[in-house]
Image 1 (tube, rainbow, N blue to C red):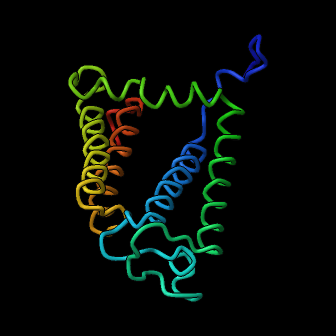
Image 2: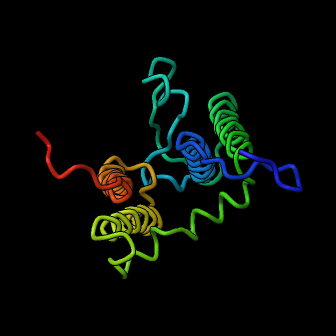
Length: 182
């Protein structure tokens, strides 16, 4: 790795776990905000303290309350944890790239053009792009249309599509090996 004129480290690959920390933190903050406004689920509200302690401290799910509801201890700790994840992940990303370049690279890369052009990375990358897009679109559609942001069934479908997308995307980048495997 080398420094450019601005002192920013260049040519460093961002670790996958750093991106995952940022994504989990942002996702947690969005869910916390939706939960505080009773928009995370149509029939109940999540107690983050109960959910993250497997109901050792209190019940994880309670009746939905109309309007704004904030549990001081549980929501504060959960939000602080999410902010901590974002800060840690951003710090690791910033050691390798600027956060702005990293964020731009999420949208402008060699995976998304493969949605309609299999010659760019083969069939695996095309299927990877479609799985990633469908997983994200399904989660967003179901969350918006049915207020099912914390529904286990939605997570199951989304995680299956996203995991297949990540696996196929990484498999499409493996260099060709020996023809003979014995």
